[in-house]
Length: 148
Image (tube, rainbow, N blue to C red):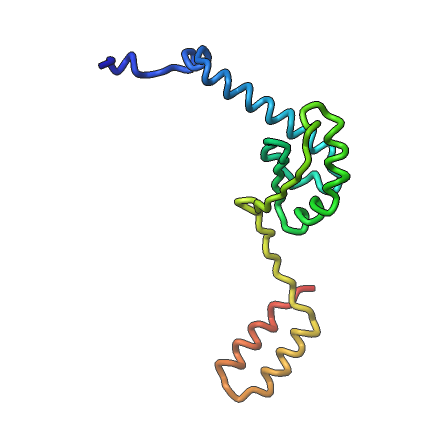
């Protein structure tokens, strides 16, 4: 059994392993393939589209929305024709598009619309017609929140 100090791998040792070199080379090839695929896509479909894989002539892409995936499928012959000009995608004959929505989406900040003078006037008018004292006070308080 190895000692703990021998079991720990440092980053220096990782750079010398053939597995890591192979992994980095494959990641670089994937990045280059994705660049070529995105260059072949129409400009309006590039954002939100990713290259997944290309095996045995089947090209797999992922799109953020179903609408974008449908547009890619609709224009698949045009896209594959452009891609076949590249040596890497010369034998592509099938295009598959998967929908993969983003994991986290930024929610827009909720903005309260200011109360208009007309709505404030209507609230005061309604408060004047209300017999319930608590409800009248609430309506008057709401009406006082008007902004110019």
